[in-house]
Image 1 (cartoon, helix red, strand yellow):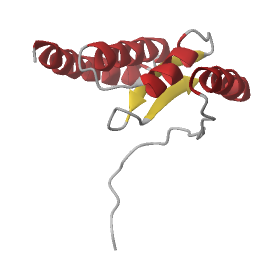
Image 2 (spheres, helix red, strand yellow; image 1 turned 30 degrees about the vertical axis):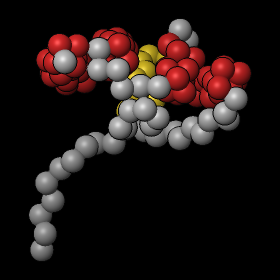
Image 3 (cartoon, helix red, strand yellow; image 1 turned 120 degrees about the vertical axis):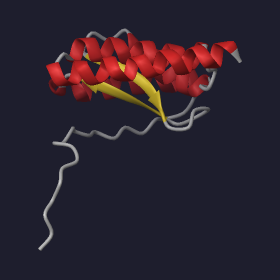
Amino acid sequence: MRKRAEHIIFENARVREAAQALRSGDLILLGKIMRKANDSIRYLYEATGDELDAMFDAARGLPYCIGSRMTGGGFGGCTVNIVESSRTDEFISVVGKKYTEKTGIVPEFYICESGNGAKEEQLS
């Protein structure tokens, strides 16, 4: 229970730190926060699994992967990765190969871009 509580306390602090990193445009800091968050949910909250860990580990050391962390409900799910846009195809190839070698599963990748976020709209 102590490890779970530590994760929650640290995660709340990371969310505030990540929001500030986004406001200041510091993607390198955001990437570090994402990796810390993944390690916390992996080792303190213990809510990942072998396949999810394999995906994170495959992305972790790549210099063009700015940040990575699990998302979803845990024990499966997905990872979210911030990747230099010019290296997306390379990321998919390298991570896909490493993941398949480790798990025997061919992964799916979904390329997304961030938008302007939620905003207020006036209805007529």
